[in-house]
Length: 499
Image (cartoon, rainbow, N blue to C red; front, top):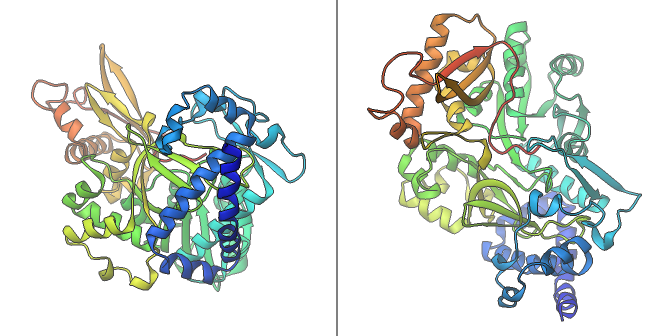
């Protein structure tokens, strides 16, 4: 029965697949389509694709067939997609071999690439990808870059980490469709050398992790490199970016946009658009709007738009995002895959209505002909990146927002690490910073005062934690969180890591 149902759905959807494939090869047609097609069409099309992807994986992937059959399948008859069991690294990836997780239990030796995650969760994982699925991802990233960065001809400098990680290699391949590409990795000297060699007549798109672009600007200032003579655009990913950091970068970059993806899934799942950035900035400045859109969370999430035809995203009861790549060309399908990022989704009409109710009008910021009729995705980051003390949850985003409220601190800070410190049996939140300036008692005091002040403004948990009778009551270095500037480069714990 399932096989018959799959083929019925597949035959019905085949003309739509061919139409979408035709559109994807022409940027102008693709842009026209996402701007003029009603959001309800995208939603309906995506749900049908979703069920086809589920049936396809269940019929052809040995590991997934075993995984689903070992669960209670009686609820599947209701055609409620939420009844299909979630998968994640613990329940699915570790349980089955890469071969068993591949279609027909076979990993082709030709046209297959193996990506490796960075191991931020404790263990590096290997992910196999077919040629066709990589080509589709490259097209999506290429279109995203062209939509956000107006110049059609760009000179892309790819500063993402090279090697087995998915982002660096694939970004370079994707941007070949947009212009010249030089893959240099996160190497400051090579970027400056490239700019000097090729001159200021090009539109440069520098791609990398958000802190690296900041390091690039800081290094240019230290070396008296004339960065202001160049036309620069930025495309970032791999982790979250605060609006304060965007403001900092856009002192020299014309525009900076972020993409969302995960090595577990693929790059190019979603991307910031001019509209999504304006909404996020409005939410930053309007607490009532932020609450209406994203709830009571004190953090300001990253806000993206995504294509529901190729990626179905739902939210579970723990406010975690659950992803399905609905294309059939995926060698190792992930159905309702949970990478444990917190966030939410909202359709365009709901977003428009809620923004209008709180005084933010789309038309006042972005022309209607440039608004893609795609749903929104917002992402806070990994749930396990928080630090909790006495019931107070402190997030890396809180620290980053605190830093960028003070230009002196943001300009001298290279990286930071959020953790816990035990002093005399008492556990307190602790931050360590890598700084480029001299470490003095005045600097330590400034870090301490700024971080604590902003945490009290941003984080309701922290406000409760610091009420009279709790740990933090006096201006004593032992009573405040331990803020320790450090010279050694420290690992960052930020939102939305996709390495």
